Image (cartoon, rainbow, N blue to C red; front, top):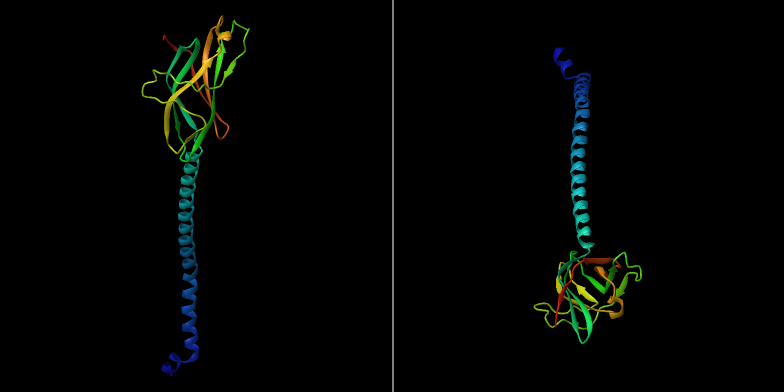
Length: 195
């Protein structure tokens, strides 16, 4: 009779119930492990997305950088009774995309004790200095490709009647970019060259 009870349907049900209970004990543990693995995968996705966003922000910042000026040399000189001031300047496009300088102008700031003249704005001249050396004359508008540097002379004819009894305190060279920003180079001293 003992052998009959061992293989009876009631024993099989009890045996299956023990297996089910043992699986039910492990099922929450298995669910927690799967949830933890999903957390690790989602965290890894977040970290990768954050890195990709950082790289995209750096690329964007590299594209929107502006043009930076550098004043190499400046001089004042005479030619046919006209007085000119010339600037050897270098413009570097810091961006990775192209940018341009649409126009350039010279602003003269006079001594503050001389209230006779306000600041004076002068357009560029087509005359180039004969003693320019290695630099050519810059023409505007000027296109600069990404990370390009262009150097050259920019010359302005100074109005004679304005300079007779005044002292120029500062020469401010303003280049207007395609985006409308003003790139400024300023000097207080200009070398005078006799001809």
